[in-house]
Length: 276
Image (cartoon, rainbow, N blue to C red; front, top):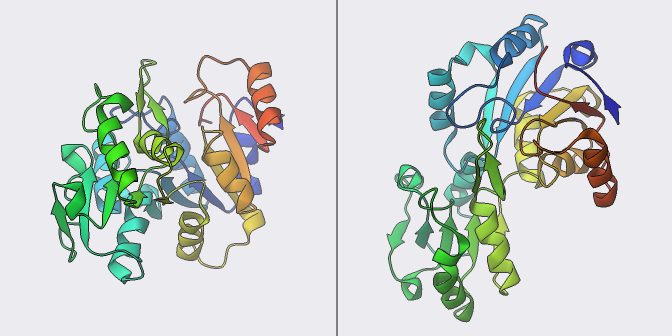
């Protein structure tokens, strides 16, 4: 677990970078300082860049957000989102459920399945599964969903969670819960959850196929979460750099190292931020 002041010294060691978005590149509305220059430097070195995100939306929508923040498409090779991979899983027809879903989501994400042969229903008893994309508003808490989750458990309704993150952090330090918190609560109540996104293997396999014949030893994942980014990279057997200024902001390095050891995790590098 090597502590670095910047990513500059290890860029030459890798040929592809799987970059987390929220907490590493941006906070949903602002780029972190020096991020764009860092991405430009990596691309100038001839390396591949894949944004690997637990965003519960299609890749083109993620690309639109990045463009608005100043990260143009020519600065990266691919975007892999949990929403994109989950969408294609449902599109493929291999889901064991029917096509009627009860949705838990913010209004901005409500159209995810809009052009697939799926129907949104508004009564749990009419649904084949719950589509969990996250909290409806930033003000909502788990208490707002307790009744729905308890009723769904009683009728054994499966849940599809397209964002395993438990929470995200803004540059300001504000924290907001994500879909993963709802899914975790549902499992604790006895519900069955199908997860898409980091740390689960399918998103890494999807990203690896997109970049072609790149050996896993030549890939570095950069993320800020000990719950998703680090275990996901390690299970996929690629190196990982943990950014300590995202979701772990507020913890000093000794504490972060202690947390890693308690979880049995060992990122290859610790970075204060994603920057050169």
